[in-house]
Amino acid sequence: MVGVGRVVSSEVVKDMQLKETEVMFEHALSASNIIPWEFSIAKKQLYSPSFNCTESNNIIPVSVYMRLWVHPDSRVQFEQQLDNLIAGKQDYLNTRIRARVTLGGDYEWVHITGRNIRKNGAGNTERIFGTLRSITTEMERENELIRLRESAEESNRLKSAFLANISHEIRTPLNAIVGFSQLLTITDDKLEQQDY
Image 1: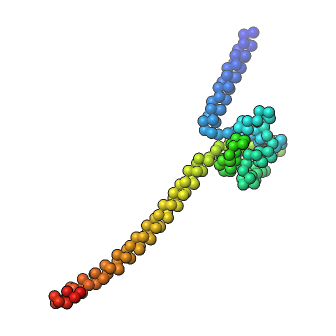
Image 2 (image 1 turned 180 degrees about the horizontal axis):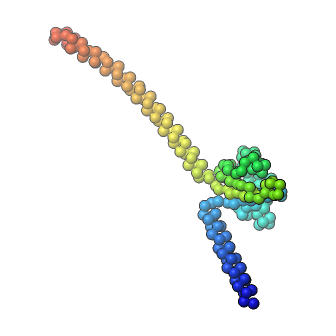
Image 3 (image 1 turned 180 degrees about the vertical axis):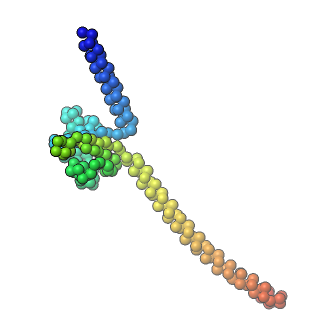
């Protein structure tokens, strides 16, 4: 009986450690705004805790996800990258698309990554695991930086044009002054100098 008690207590300790690890993992995902997802290719279903579909255990058909979650302008790109990953044409999914992070929410820019995690005996992909992270704020900052850079470039171009124009406007009268100054040095006659 003592041996059985140790096995049970060892399993209990491992169970507690696993639960602690799960809590830490969930906290890390939440704090970093990373949403995990898994795609079962044979069943054509996606799983993610962000779906909040308790009646389906957060599992939805991929066609429903594409229709309700992925922005129409991003669907073809995302489907093509998934197909390439499934077919083995690429090893890793790494793309930016517009999608909803929560059902019914607004479309946001998201960074989606994915990788084959299980292949069958024939080497065909069975499951893909990935993450989704909202990057809307980053995209807005990036667009603002691009706008500011373009504005600075335009300001620099206008400044250069202004300086070239001012330089011309200053040089023209200065050339006349320099010319008359040279004429003044050529002659010693005071009357002729006063004419200049």
